[in-house]
Amino acid sequence: MPGPPADPSQTVEATRDTSLWWKSAVVYQIYPRSFADANGDGVGDLAGIIERLDHVRALGADTIWISPIYRSPMADAGYDISDYCDVDPVFGSLADADRLIGEAHARGLRVLLDFVPNHTSDQHPWFIESRSSRDNPKRDWYIWRDQPNDWRAALGAGSAWTWDEATGQYYLHLFLPQQPDLNWRNPEVVQAMHGVLRFWLDRGVDGFRIDVAHCTGKDPTFADHPRCLAGEPLADFNDDPYSHEVLRGIRKLVDSYPGDRVLVGEVNIRSTATVVQYYGAGDELHMSFNFPPLDAPWDPVVFRTCIREVDALLQPAQAWPTWVLSNHDNERHRTRYGGSMRRARAAAVMLLTLRGTPFIFQGEELGLEDVVVEPGQRVDPGGRDGPRGPIPWDFAPPHGWRAARTWLPFPPEAATLSVQSQWSQPSSMLHLYRTLIETRRASPALRLGSWEELPSPPEVLAYRRRHGDDDRVVCINFAERPLPIDLEGDWRVAIDSLPEGPDRRFDGMLQPEQAVLLEPLHRPRPQPQQQRQPLQP
Ligand code: GLC
Image (cartoon, rainbow, N blue to C red; front, top):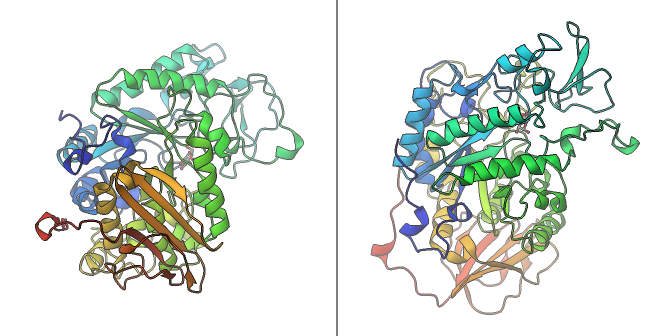
């Protein structure tokens, strides 16, 4: 098995702490059903991912996170797992997973898998045993009660308790009834799930994205919720101390492996103050997703508040931030911003210049919007099909997919937004992302530097990033009219969200919904021979 790749940051400039590779990482989320299809059945697969890894490399991302690939009845698109140590046939085989890990490493890409600790599928042999009788040895691997309480499940599933006729008790599920919750207070469950982590760590993965990392511990008293929370899914606010113990155990295990494996958690709670707790004392998550920007409309007040809060709360806790605008559960951000490509381009400048590790959801580098799904075509019980449309690779239908019909329709403008079309247009969204990532990688200030907000008109967000003598400024105009900004010093536009082109002295005016990355005017510029040619897949 090839080992983890060389630290990509080494190739530009050594960071002070090269072991913390994930601080300098740019992570690309692959949703395997929709990325690329090698076997022509209209659903993406692992062999398809391998075929398209060079796209990720050409974009400049250095880490991939792959949503679940395990055996699953697919009640929740693979987040209902019936065998954690095998690949679902729709995606391929274990041999394909090994090949994918090896091919990614050979290209300098690290691999994070999705780990789903909170629940299994109701078809998992553990649950089949557990529900077979009250005295089955695995009964206590899940959470059984004589009486339900008022806890609610997510995905519109109603009560979090489902009655099991055969054994006359209710079982708990924070998501669908097909996703029974594991009982992590049972040491055998802990041992079995640690075995799952070892299985994949031994195969060479570089870490995990932990699904609903805040949900494994439940209030042991099973008290009803206060009235104000009645009707809210428990998964949106569950915060029992036992989840921290679970995470400490996982962290210890992961740290016992060589190669700085990493844990990034989905703590799907809209309170940054609570999310920070899941970094522990450096002994829980390495990073946690920060959810407010995933809901945020195109609004300077919302972004300013959220960015200030992350800075104020995470910095003192030495908790490394993450930034994410889109994923497989939420409306794509271009759609959320009213379909505006101009706003999506400005947001890309923000995402890739904030202090913290950026996560890119497949297709946002193309400026894709949500798929329009007719009522009869709906697949997801939670109504989240929109962001999950297939990636259009080629201009001509079927856009590089090998089937006449894909499992979901393509997003709007699939031909013009295809990878093929955008590679040939220097002003495309794809090239904007590529240039931003390349610039970030070459700049210690953007990767690891300090963050300081600069005075600006209320509809402009401006900040400075510094590391040693590397100095950058970013200005984002959220308004639909031009606005001036008064900056100290002389600056050159290094990257412009508008296609009119960078490389000019900054005159202090921001066009409507424009974002610029600035560098000092008198900074020595790279000689032409030092400039790397973009890598084409
Ligand atoms: C996470 C996943 C989501 C899934 C849920 C239950 O929120 O991102 O897709 O439905 O967990 O596993």
